[in-house]
Length: 331
Image 1 (tube, rainbow, N blue to C red):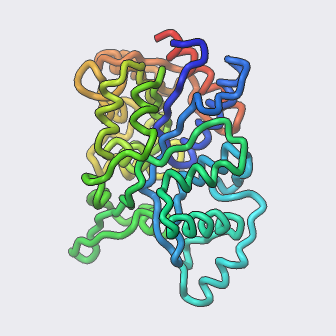
Image 2 (tube, rainbow, N blue to C red):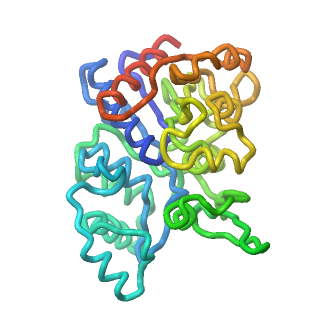
């Protein structure tokens, strides 16, 4: 690896945002400088949606807010110091989902984004414009400029129908058994500007401890991205989102079961696959609680690494990222 490596991370969700912050901090501590363009976060846009005439990008905003230090760590999403005056008004008019609250500060980003999109800006141009407000220390790239919002196929009273992922996730908390997760139009999508270059020139590619199905999955299904990861000369390292057979947060367990993937660290590793056998990974990092799985991962053809992967605060996220930098620097 070069002295100051280029790190590209596939990420989404709150866990991915926490890891990106830790990676920025660990990078600065290790190399004595802010990473800025040296770290590129390729962020899931499958969670995106239109609501009340506005374009929302939850994962893009989660990463941006976390890097800017303005995220609400108590709730785990949105801006800190929020109010909800406008959201209450929208509900009063019947113009918003009553179970999906938009904070006033957060609405500022949605309004700005929607205005620029309607003026003809691309999704990636808008993401760059929004991010320029703060000194983030990393570059954020949407996985694609195409709308490929995740739909969840469910069966109700014997009839199959689809709902937006946010409705399934936020309204029903994943309680409605999912039959499939789909991204209509993704077969015709293209990676946003800079994505393939960030992968092909990276000194290391990381799969954040995000939901493998609905956060990392849509990124890898965007035509050209999976191939770019597989054919990269850089080491590819994944971090398990499962500890001791349970999802660290969110509903990764429910999503994995829908795909028939075992809810375990080795189940996720097998889902991603190893590059020696046509998959994605060279390295996989698992928690101490799953140390007994290391020999099995080695049998898969992976370099297995064991340590605490909890990110209960920024210090733990930074320690985890420092360990990851150490692994890929030796590869």
